[in-house]
Image (cartoon, rainbow, N blue to C red; front, side, top):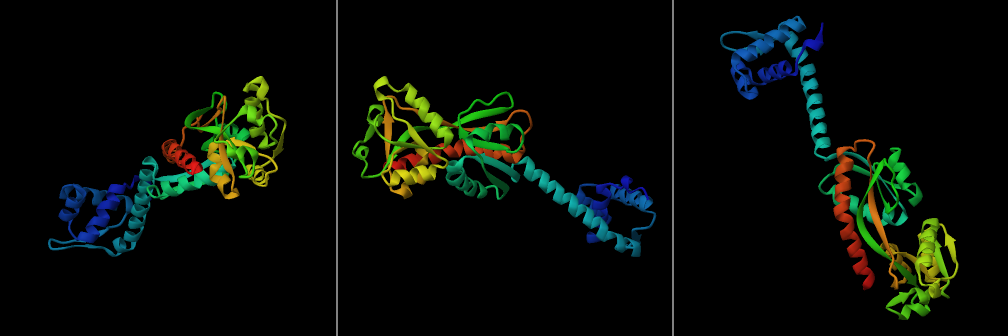
Length: 310
């Protein structure tokens, strides 16, 4: 039996007639004439090779074979309707899986809050957070391991696009008993003899660049390097050293009892970007979440910085 000749419209006619016991009412439901419904049934019966309905002048009823076949037709329509709903959700950015990479602070503090808020309007979108070192973000987006990445501004090459989300000043974190805690703002000259600890090679390089751009009489001393920003914050909390980070690290720094001080003369800014692939078409779900992040992240950063002042 060549079932490839069967159409969904024929199955819809079968189910409608079975429920309504009328060709005319089935036609009204489907927006067709009675004769068009009759034609659909005749074509289906021809393909199946048996009569589906027993018809008299007074009633329409399923034949014995028709009753046995009805469940299969209903099952096909349910699967088609489910597929249609899935396609609608995907097209409207309402469903799908999105893999988002970010370094520690953004992955642990910003992304979970963003996902919770996004889930209120897009509950079928599953966002997976992937802890990713800063140096690996661009490559993972380019090779398809990540759909989106959030991190510091970096050269992207031809296969990834970076869209600025927010700017964050580099700040000093120190314990309340630290000598610099009494100042509202710290100049580079104030850091010249201050022991510093950096979190990871990314921070070390950033601090080194800032050190080079500082006035000659404000070159800060060598810094120790630890792997994680939480370790650097812990060292600073004991007064053993101070640490320089972007301001949004305030989301992690406050539980350590640290004070934030802006570093000026000159002030250095870290730009955080949302990265997306250029060499492949993103899924509607990934595209929708990226757009949400570009609107949400600046507000999150503003809240974090405002809280840090209090």
